[in-house]
Image (tube, rainbow, N blue to C red; front, side, top):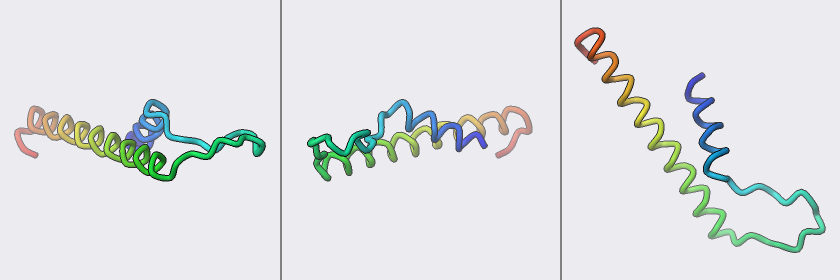
Length: 67
């Protein structure tokens, strides 16, 4: 549950590209730019999950003396 909330929070803060609201919008986003944004978002999510994993491991060590 925490991972899902974290994922949604990161997607909102990173600013993942969305489709234009209007089909009359002539702006076409470069696929390379979209790919780079997706890669950046993915890396941000993985980094945040790793950070949360480290915090959990530290908490287990402090609480129970093992991990």
